[in-house]
Image (tube, rainbow, N blue to C red; front, side, top):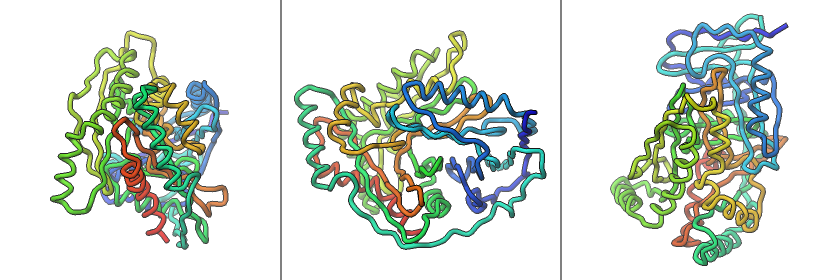
Length: 410
């Protein structure tokens, strides 16, 4: 017998706070107060290997075939939802989760989706209070000095002509006296980084500013970020820094590699693409990025293309790996000195129609099994003009969202 999955409107709830109803929150994807929150787990699995994206598609379709869907709301993000967090490397585990209950909000409209033939859960039943604790931080896989040495080594490889760009990441370890509350972290990130996508999938939580792909019917969008400068908090000075970032030859070079890799990956599937000639400066609470929104229209006359196909083609982009991809990936394995896990991998949601939003897992951390420790990550794009001291400062700025979220919630 197929299981029922039902989606109904909650009505007009302009003040609905998605994260105020956190009982066993399992998944999230929130931006600007809108998005999706999942509670509980109906089914989950993991995939790995070179075919992990197609294996994820197969598993998702198998689960959909076991459901009898009743959806009176319709539209993107309604009905059953798959939340996915893919590993950066194919050899590591990628996580797939279908929540039992999903609350969605978009454009002043709110809805609830639940699996089972029982009574719809109430918002009050999804309430929970977080527990505070004390948090301490320690070095991750490499010390600051050791990481700067790896950056200098990468610059030498680039200047010798081995490759054009490589992204080097580093980690930091946070330890807590009690279980770390993902609800508190998400609440902080949503409030302080409203222009990012705040995500949670299988204990990987963060606020990414980079959208790998959004597929809505036949329109595909990818937001590319590369080129970063730290904010000072002084508005006038930050405006000057934004202007210098927009003219920085080092950052424009890094950005061009990332945009080119995304545009080239999308081109085979699109009848037309739009790639702006000049990036804009994206202002976040802690840093500013050079950003470009690449868009395209999926070619419907070609072999059917779904979001799993696009993810497979886009990952890894130059924004998280480098150029050329193969040489950059090989150098990462030599220099980085750590296992990225699901950091810098695709993360997001996909609905039953094949629409979805998938970002790159940046500005994030992964909880330990006992939820009393978290490994947080940051990465920097290294090109010929990179300076190790400046890259270290950039990595520290990129670590600050998760550091602050952990410190404030304590």
